[in-house]
Image 1 (cartoon, rainbow, N blue to C red):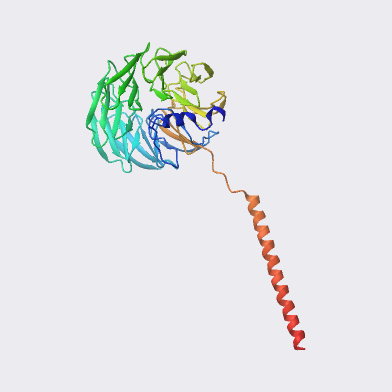
Image 2: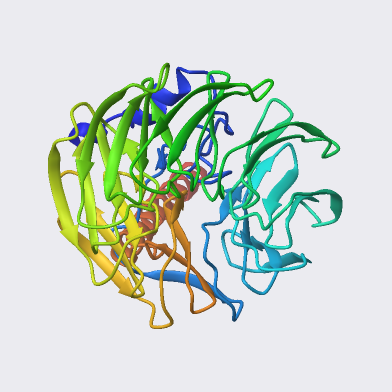
Length: 410
């Protein structure tokens, strides 16, 4: 796979002590996979658009699901948080909030955390959906939570970044920006990285919310930062993708696309993948921002790419999900969902899960391979032949013994 060998982005993030997951499965427990928001999984990835199952909710599913321990957790415009079985799409439970759910859930310690447009952050039992607590902010919550060390970090349209106690929902601290916070926090090395509609990218102390630095772009920052190798990658409404030094916010490089960048970057193997409202998916060199390739879709791209097995999965606002070769941008496959925009994907255990504005959650994966018939027939024939040979030998031996016995008596 070249640049993807070993999934370097995951290794880089892990070296910062933040990524945790089950030892045997690379789950996708929160927005953009991990606390660093790399958007990268070590899972294998499907090379065809074969649909394993789909589950219809009927109202748009705007944000990506979380997948953990064989279950999918996802929110919908119908105000519910749904839990489905990852293997079959079978309904497990749902919980009704007071408004749209456009926040991507995070799963940690047997608990699901998610925001809602009813201005609340919810904590639900992951197995049953039973409510544990909720916290009321000052405005709708579109940001997706990051959960680490017993704390929940999330933004709100009231302009605040909140840190809540994961056990009881008590406020630990909040930091007030000048405008709406759609961006979802990345939490790395004791720091919180998040964007705001006040045109800034912020770095806050994760323990107390104290500002460490901020960097002012030329437009609103809906994009959620990805933090890899002490670099912060993020998009802005000024049409640029930025790389900033994670320690002090100093600019390293920026790349100008043809329109707003609300997509959140994925980072893998020294490459940055990000969408733009100019209908393109871009692949940039993580070190210097140089263009590696771009791919033209059939609509604006505000979904966030997911990377696995050397492939990049990304949705367009015209209703298509694309699978692209991560090295050269060549189209591997695509799928058209006629109901409208396709959201951000997640990749777990060789399956791509994605929601769409047609109200459907899709699971794409390779079809099961039937057991080969010819080898089975050959095996049966060989075994039968051996059995016949052995039986013949035993019968012949018994006959000879009988003949010898008769001759001895005579």
